[in-house]
Length: 497
Image 1 (cartoon, one colour):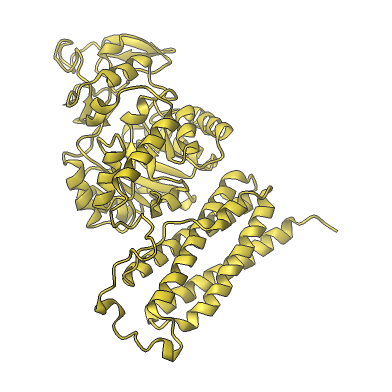
Image 2 (cartoon, one colour):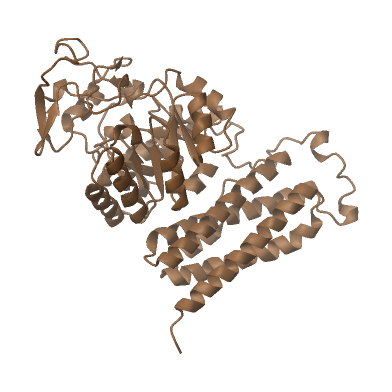
């Protein structure tokens, strides 16, 4: 059994464990470590220069070939800088971008138009609906328990349940998720995974200062504080969750008093008392007086470990909590499936006599196609990440988007049949990854697309349901187009005789 969910196919990761794009803390070393362990990581690049963003993107790629993303905060960034940050993300070919705080529909549109997946972190149902209408590919429901900046005032479980009721896109949970038990709990609610910050802040690869890491390890359960005292460099009335210190106890005076007091430095940049800066490796100064961000789960973190070890422990813990659960992201063992109700298969008793596929055979065929599409999505994403050829990159992104679309369609078709969708990835992915060279791998993908086409041509006439038949026909036509486009691209790049 594994924890693979559909959002893993969107993000091209093995497990639905996502590193939050913590400003300053989530740098290349940490992002790469999380990605290599099978999760997905976001670089925390709020208000950073496009030069640093480009350098950090390159540094991640030096450490891993796996996809990753960047976190931006439009509301806390001047328009000209935000424009340059978005350009750096697009030119850097990052797989995804997270946006937080006030919704920037224009930024969502720009990123998606460039082929970048967009995840929006929200703190309420209203924000979730607005983000989805703006085109967000993924919603991150952030509960009140979260460390750092906290958008909403709802508890995580209530918020996730609320957002799931209105979401047509995958939902991830954030806020106080610290270990495998927490991950299992939000997945039972219906979230497709979780976004974690504090658990990864207290790791060796984190760019947080050792003082901050030690304070998290030393934290007692329930010790965090929800406050608006740390406000400089952020929109007004923005609450944060931190560990208690002299600021939260009121020993440093009025947070809005002038003149501002310098308490540290990051190179040539001054760090002010009451600013939103947290202690980083590159800083000097009075760390006790800085924002010591931590979620409510901080009291359950007992040591500083490698990020990969923490991720694997979270995955193992979640799996140990979920083996008996009947959930969409767990494969069903033969003989373990509950009998479908008469309603699910009503009217299909004579299907075989009319040449139509019986429900159980149809479900098996759809699951085989789902596994193949999931594998194809991953291979296409890797090609898009690895190639420097703009034409091949664009083609791979089109193929990836199509494969993800058909994964979702097949997933829901199986649910409509009353059958649990497979969470496996076809052998095609493993075989494709053994092939050296982007063009050779694309040719292999094309052969895989051809296999799907043949499968669909055989299955289509045996599907009785009109809606499902139409979906499979559309899927067939999309694959045929992609095969033609890939053949053309490969022919154009073939060496002259």
